[in-house]
Image (cartoon, rainbow, N blue to C red; front, side):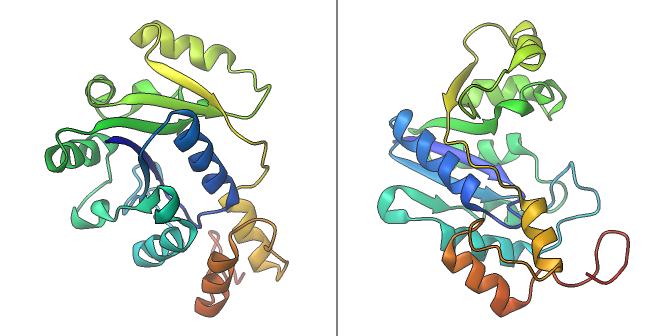
Length: 206
């Protein structure tokens, strides 16, 4: 199986995440691609705003297993920070015959050398960096290539969808529509569960 792994906070998952996953799924000829919500993202010491369970549930609503998109809740089985290398090792142990491709935003190439065991990650997977059409990768890609060599990251263009989880949360706090930012089922779940309307990061009411 040619399997894609797409990790992230997904707080919440939005239409840009789905578009990127679908583009890579097809352009890299993958058999399946998994969203992998992080239980404890190392880069977010304060944690996510929605619970791990809610973020997994929203990812499942956004995924389309019949089209090759699914969700893994594997990181909820471990304590401590959710390091990508640990997730990949666990997945490989369970699926030793799979060819793995790890999706990251092209803007993350610059920081990739700072990840936990980046060399080990590149031994486990083909790294696939996605970028919007016409995006200038520049110094970040150059630093990545200098550190790991040519051909270690495949670049895939994705649809130019301007949306972020931060924007979704901000709109919800202001009681603005998010219909154009997230899948319909995700929007319904957020409103049913009254997510992202509690305390903001600075402790004030949202």
